[in-house]
Amino acid sequence: MRLEKEAAEKAAAGEGEEKKEEEEEEEEPVPEEEEELEDGEEKPEEEPVEEAPKPKIRRKFKHLPFTEKDYAMRDPVEEYKIIKEVEDEVLNFKKENVKTYVVSAGILYGKGEAIFNSHIQKAWLQDPVRLPYVGDGNNRLPTIHVTDLARMVKTIYEKKPNQKYIFAIDNNKKPRQKKLVSSISNGIGTGLVESIDIPEKFKRAHPKMTPIQLDLDWKKSLLLDLYVNPSALFIKQDAPPAAEGGEEAEEGAGDELLEMNWHCKSGMSENI
Image (cartoon, rainbow, N blue to C red; front, top):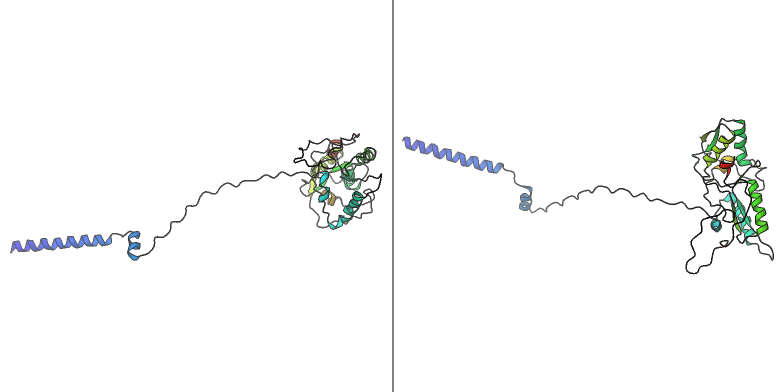
């Protein structure tokens, strides 16, 4: 009896161990891949690994100045179309023994011309203490002393160059609005300047008034932003590359440098 009882206990213990092993086997997690294979589902696609963003390449653009041979590209706004029409009539005028020229002048100064005269008076009176410029003042302003303009016209009349459209501007290397206003303030004022807001509206200029007679809104003129080279007839320029393919030289390319006694060749900033 005793032996039978022990055998029964061992058999019961063995069944318990086998049941425990089966339970443990059931508790083991089945890999997802095996489940997908059993269920017939497709394996999900792996998400692409995001690459580190490439650094942005900042392209540098070189701003090239206008030259006298670009005059055909002029496209004025409605207010100034009459000026272009007059210039075109002069350039297209043809008559025996008559040569015509268009002298395109920068902003005049030196003899009371309206645009800069306002600043010169304010700087002289030191009222206001800080001489105003418009906006950030980084725009380029081509200028010329009225004495140099008169001498340039006289030289053109005497020498009669082949080039018909001529820029009348000085050789100011840094013609920024703020620098020009600062030079006036440093030369005859307190040396202080300040920025003012750009006006929303401007007065319309009358085309029949001269710069001395006309009470121009100086803010509008000082907002001009025009990057131009001075005339190659009066200021020596770097030699352009030779034409390829036997092309003809551009008009005025063969003209020699015209000698002229400059009054303010380097501009207002250096001569005030």
